[in-house]
Length: 258
Image 1 (cartoon, helix red, strand yellow):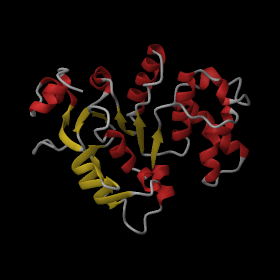
Image 2: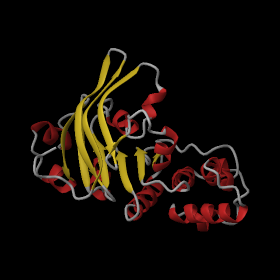
Image 3: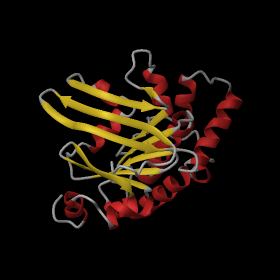
Image 4: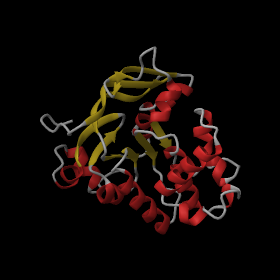
């Protein structure tokens, strides 16, 4: 990150983060400060460490047996790797939306109510409120309010992805991690998700992997460029695309490689 370009209201601070899968080093000494209630895009060629980095922010990589992680990630000034950290609570606060929509094979209502139920909300009235609020937050309530008991797998791809966003919102997270959330969608659905993401940043901090540089330009406030496991450059999106400081960044965004 460029010195003197510290974002206002840093929510997540990453210090000297390294990650190995067995012998392969996937992340090399990553240092970044992610600002609150902004959209931070992670760009770079395939296999450069973007998704690996994203999943480290809520310890999803813990699930992979050969992973070794060093360094520190501070979320609200607490190291997420500290022994006392409850990983389930961390993932409640830092939610995840995946590349392919992955609704559970159950009703639309039960998809959204699943998380709140696991966190102890059982009263039907309260669940009804939570489900409606989350579906409204994901801009899909009007499309599904008459069919909440229907199987979620009957929705279109774009609707399924917005349902998955609603499912993430239902547990009231602080942060939404999005791993290429529009890559499996058609242009109209992509546009709806982009509008939704820009709306959500009023209330949530969003970190989003995207292969689509135009998408990064359209919706992100900050952009981080990854290459071969390194964070090459991070800054305001306008600066990264209009005035990149590193030749490798310039080469990538002008299409010379990647």
